Amino acid sequence: MSARMEVEVVTRREELRPEALRGRAAVVIDTLRATTSIATALAAGAAWVLPVDSEEAARAAAARLRDPLGEAPLLAGERDRVRIPGFDLGNSPAEFAPGRVRGRGIVLCTTNGSRALHAAAPCAERLYCAALVNAGAVAAELGRTGAERLTLVCSGSGGHFSVEDFLTAGCLIERLGAADGLEDPRGEALRLDDAALAAWLAWRSGRERLRSIVEPGRAARALARVGLEADVEEALRLDALDVVPVLRDGRLVALR
Amino acid sequence: MSARMEVEVVTRREELRPEALRGRAAVVIDTLRATTSIATALAAGAAWVLPVDSEEAARAAAARLRDPLGEAPLLAGERDRVRIPGFDLGNSPAEFAPGRVRGRGIVLCTTNGSRALHAAAPCAERLYCAALVNAGAVAAELGRTGAERLTLVCSGSGGHFSVEDFLTAGCLIERLGAADGLEDPRGEALRLDDAALAAWLAWRSGRERLRSIVEPGRAARALARVGLEADVEEALRLDALDVVPVLRDGRLVALR
Image (cartoon, rainbow over all chains, first blue to last red):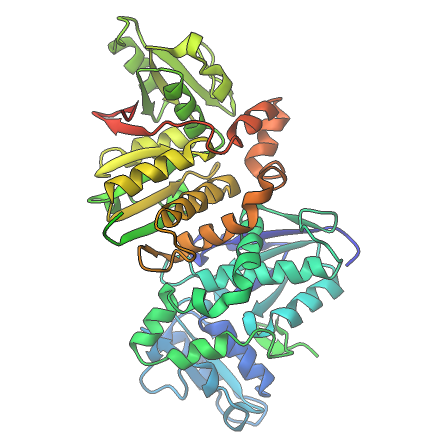
């Protein structure tokens, strides 16, 4: 990373003004669960993931598109956290296993993350997805490309602040700073806005006990209520996946 | 504190839904500078502070009201950070000195804090003001009264997240937990929402270096640009004031 990088954090997708992303790199974060699932799917060999903002758009895209295997893409997504009726997959990371998704296209419709992605896609100069499972890989890529202006978009959950998204943003910031051996990201290489600084501070306190912070949070409790505790386990596997989902022609693909 | 306390944090005043404060205690935070100035004024012996949401409302109130000394109240406030033309005082904490404000009523109009107070006032069951200068005093009072449901309202700055407000919220949470000897506020006595937990985490990382975090922030830089760096110094005097501003009949007074 040569130039100074300016980093801002949006704390909930409702605060995102997509037009403010023009000329910026953006990273959408929905750690529970959309961006964890997207990273998992691409790491498992899926050809692409198309984020959409409604079930109707998902069905229309699935009817229109073909994936590299010549098949209609898989339909994935949730409503109120459970698989949408008639869809092939829900939004649990473990569902996106190699045996199911390798080579396939996936159309993804979720309540928060896929909508944040859909909103950001037309405006950001470059668009990535990150979660705790691939934070290191995404930070390394951002360091390599030396984006000068970066927006980390925390999706949040149903209009509410999500602590796991904020911590993921803080983790990315730490990794960006660490690439320059910084102790304090308000040093030379990074210029953080107030929310970015707060995310970094929260990460520094929280990184050693992610489980005890994330499990009692709003999103994890809502998943536990429908028997999806295992998804939280998956999402907490920090740096487990060496994959960088990046938007190309409207679809998320694994950066090669 | 006997019962379990439920604590939520609103990260910017624009997110506040006043009607959601019904039945709750609320603490409005605008550390740079309104709530620091209010705490300073009341600690200096001001009789009351009336927060208003416009210059017109300030002038009308000043024309209508008399303070305990039988005089028209002092007009205080800022527009674009500097004293409103014709007003007696700006919004710098040091202006609210005993020689100027003892025994007086003050009508306060600021861009963020006094508007957050004005919005919250009709709905919250009890309403306090806090800043770093009086965080310990306010937390002790909340612990004494054992509020069951508490909302910490960070005012933010011109629609943006303010790191010093978020840290002040985290400081209050730490003090509330510390009253019970808690190590982790997600323990028995406090139940934190996601933003409250993030604020507490940020405070734990930031408390030892408040100056290096707050000074490069948006609000402090804006003050420095107009020569008001000294206000930041004042605002960083953690626990300097043993005063609890509380709303009584629409005016903030020092709790006795």
